[in-house]
Image 1 (cartoon, protein in one colour):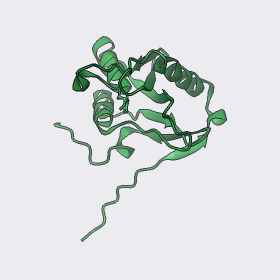
Image 2 (cartoon, protein in one colour):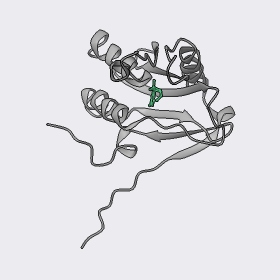
Image 3 (cartoon, helix red, strand yellow):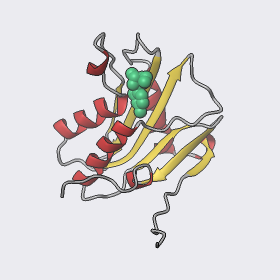
Image 4 (cartoon, protein in one colour):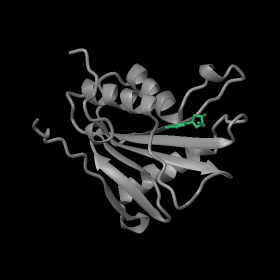
Length: 158
Ligand code: THU
């Protein structure tokens, strides 16, 4: 048996060390979380991207009384970006959580379904890696360079 050379890499750093643009995108994700429709979970999530053009776009989770009809913040945003800017290249995706249930000691990484959708966005841009930043632990952020770190052995049809 041979061990496969797959080594996901994550980095953590104090939020204060973010570049100006990174801090701006994270701030947009936090602002977007305030617009979440999350009456059922009370877990407000915001996502924001910066495109190669410099444009910043954001979205939030949108829940539904019929629970499976709701959608995570990342998917709301990335499907909008794909539909509205089909040629756009996403450089950075930030994800933020605002909730009474938020535990500051924890790291809030995107859910599995959203990882698959982030993977599709990255595939659409010839796999140019999307930087991903998410919150925690404490006043730090956790980050990786490309969805392959969060989703090794990604499913792709082509
Ligand atoms: N949620 C997101 O928006 N993004 C994730 O990556 C995980 C979960 C939302 C879905 C639901 O509205 C709420 O958080 C609780 O699961």
